Length: 314
Ligand code: UDP
Image (cartoon, rainbow, N blue to C red; front, side):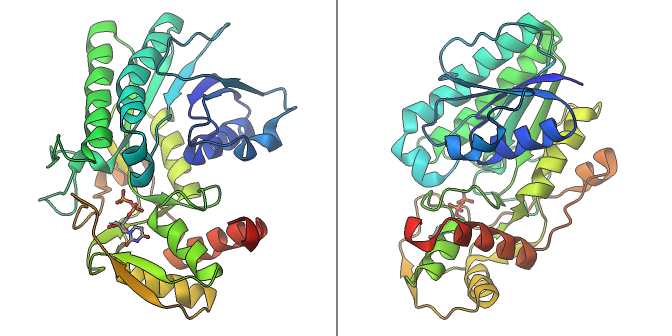
């Protein structure tokens, strides 16, 4: 049993991680400043003596009393809309937040895991993306605030590993979806489901030919734990290699929900990657991990979650 600090513990991925660790008997200290996270995601854990929540901005110095075995840095705005609205906070949490989290891990003699991203590959010229690919990122474009912060966070993590001998794990997370995504966070799966449920037009950016690979949150979190418990440093891609165009996703959402909606085409965001698909050979061979939930099934479960909130609240 371990005592685990999770930054971003009230976020979409962070809160699912809290649940998975608590279910296996670990103790969790979740830190979040709630700029994109929500207490609703962790409210069910209040009163559980394996769980503590601390409201704190991890871009500022972090201190946690007592022993800590593992620090997992999962705090960051993660939707393009959020990091375009909060560019400086995004850069700070990826840089200063990583530095502070690594400082905590070093002081406590803890293992450290960083939530990195497929965005380190930018608009990739290699397809599918292997961990060896160095990426194609525009540092001065609007997405650069997220991409470069995460690239810096990987470099900082490796520096602490090499210089301070901190045991580290780097996971590169590809598009993930599921319950607890914010209805209005702007990401494509939540947008399409919420638009369909509300009878609004489906907004496809560009011509819909760009591709993404969508991993259900339960699979994704199982991948995080597989890496955490392994001897691998990474970086390791954790994502679902099933690749879909955004037009195909729109069709599938409408089919799964059995709803007919108008589709409207809007401008493609600047530097929007044309294609993305993880090569998960390493995850399969080194961690024995692969995703299990098909997109259709995952979309159904995600739609049920949004429906359970009440369509008027979306
Ligand atoms: N997208 C879209 N309509 C939306 C939201 C997103 O067509 O309402 C597109 C977006 O331009 C991108 C893809 O869907 O090509 C995935 O966007 P998302 O924001 O979910 O994540 P990204 O992979 O771009 O970080």
